Amino acid sequence: MALIVQKYGGTSVGSLDRIRNVANRIKTLRDEGNQVVAVVSAMGGVTDKLIAMAKELIDEPTEREMDVLLSTGEQQSIALVTMALHQIGVDAVSITGRQAGISTTGSHTRGRINAINPDMMKNYLKEGKVLICAGFQGLREDGMIHTLGRGGSDLSAIAVASALKADVCQILTDVDGVYTSDPRVVKDARKLPEISYDEMLEMASAGTKVMQSRSVEFAKKYGVVFEVRSSLNNNPGTIVTEEHDQMEAVVIRGVSIERSQALVTITGIPDEPGMSAKILMCLADAEINIDMIVSNIAYDGLARHSFTMHSSDLGKASAALKPCIAQLSPDSTILTESGIAKLSCVGIGMRSHSGVAAKMFEALGEAKINIGVITTSEIKIAVTVDEHQIEDAARAVHEAFNLDKAPTA
Ligand code: ASP
Ligand code: MG
Image 1 (spheres, rainbow, N blue to C red):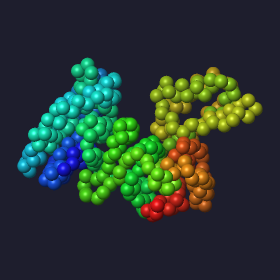
Image 2 (cartoon, rainbow, N blue to C red):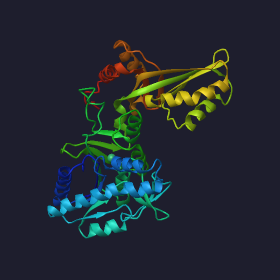
Image 3 (cartoon, rainbow, N blue to C red):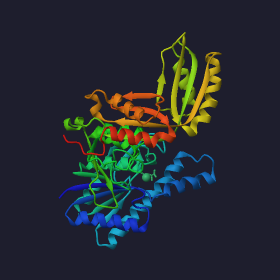
């Protein structure tokens, strides 16, 4: 008998049929003698619909009321899943975030979990009940209803698994696991049996969004091993865990792509302390998220900086930068380029293998794909390419590293 914590996302509970499917899956685990706690999201689309309704009433709803409103999405789905379980004879009970003892801190709509008191959950489990717990919500220290940010049910599930010291934690979703690359682009992309927390985080920041990154960070911090798998079949998924020695034998774990990127380059920046800060500050004030930052050593006393962002932010970025650049130097110019995409190779094996970048760039060169900017972290090499070439680029790099074949350790 194991204590299993599962999380079912919005798609997995997106219709009454899907809810029945979830109930059947939980019943199977229960019949096998396991204890089950299922953390559930709002039905797919419900949270978005609630946000849209609020915005129709008022331009800027208060965040307090948004928390009260959005937390109802999960409350609907826990009751419905529990009813579906009752219908097939499973002794289940729904619990809200507060009842699960999830206490939070931080501003409204952006809660962080600071503690979980699992007493009530433990009592119910002792009574033999299956628990259906609302994701995405908790009770703030001051007694307010609080939500955890979009996609926050992942975090609830990982935190509940940690607090209950669950034997198994599964994130059930509409994909089969984490793949070496996007299977819609690279047809021989392979499902990974396991991936380290850090690789998962780097791949998420590089465009492979399987689950909320904050929850992966939380899992890493508290050592919660979990599996990402499909709620629509019984295939084994991908285990996300602490890295171990054998993992380093693989140089590249995956190739991520991110489309719709834009590049901004500022030239003629005086080579003086504080200049980069001024430029980035004006982008931060305009609430623009930038991704890759590349700067060159100054030549003739003038430097140039480039950074990438989502292309939808490009207009806002140019507008914010113009007055700020004019103040820096009369020689500064802003160059913009849209229609680019980012390709990233991720793998902890990079730390111990050399020649990874050379091999990646060679594959791109042979495929006649020009590289724009290049950035690296300890376990990631990212480049920009023309957006219309991104799929060819992903396929070329995937093949160069033989990612379609299971590694022979
Ligand atoms: N219902 C929330 C959202 O859509 C939380 C979640 O699904 O994880 O963001
Ligand atoms: Mg969701």
